[in-house]
Length: 368
Image 1 (cartoon, rainbow, N blue to C red):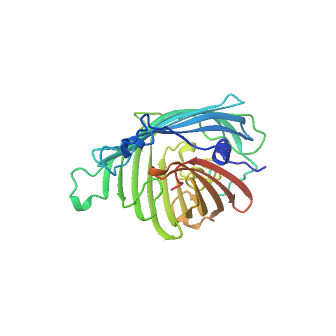
Image 2 (image 1 turned 135 degrees about the vertical axis):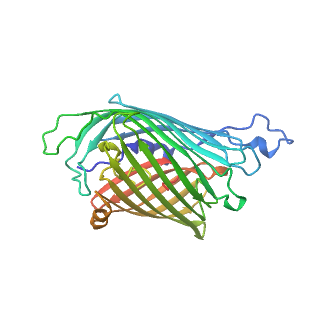
Image 3 (image 1 turned 45 degrees about the vertical axis):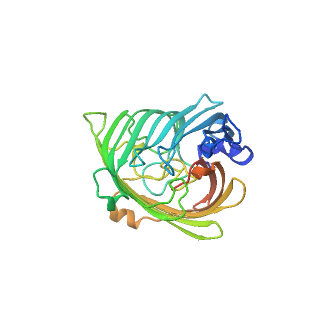
């Protein structure tokens, strides 16, 4: 039985709803261009998925004027979604740019009460043999980067602290198969670490050229939570403009998790940004590698389109990871502009995973 990403709820507004934006209060002839600043975008949420039934809700994006001309706009995303099966997902995500964009960061506060599937640990899961479980999560996380203290010639380099605090409660439903149940006692997870980044992109929402790289390292302490482990991530992305309003993006993501790692925090695809169209951690292990390539083209009005190819795999350690077979996905998508001055789009992607099942992923901003 084929399963699609739970964010199918966004498909309807992406295709047939338009973005709403604030109009300036004063429309006189003497009004300055600054008064035309877009203050918000809003989207309804309405759809259906196999696991949840009817889904409904709303999303609101707030934009704040930058602190200098041509600076980046601080944004706050709000989203609430419920289902006919009494499930709920709510999030608040501020993305802030301070001190002439020399201090930037992204925070998130998330509440999630949802249904997920566990397909075992390894690179070769059976899509038709998954253990259903209910998961309730409250999570707060933040990463702040700055180039303060660095020479002016190093302005593309940034560094800063990162943390993640979450409480997760998982309960498995009745199951008649042979897939063993993983441990679920690790509820409190507290991770503290750092990020190093290098960024030459012309735009962080839709880059037409440039390069981005970051190294992320988080240590989850068993003194501050119920389990002790580390997570590391190397993220590499490149962008170039081609022709006819078309640009190309390529990306490589390597993840590593070691120690007493809860099964839901092992390395693997998130299914939304990295290897779209599968469920979160569909294949998982102590290490994972994901490669992506995408063509992005502006069409007309607020519409754009994408064509992409993705590959990914998981393994216990690096040499094992290299020997594993690749999962593959090809697909295409459509995009709806929510804030054109910020190059901010909502996207919907349809993918053909391992050339066997279809997947649907819809989200705000680009996949990578």
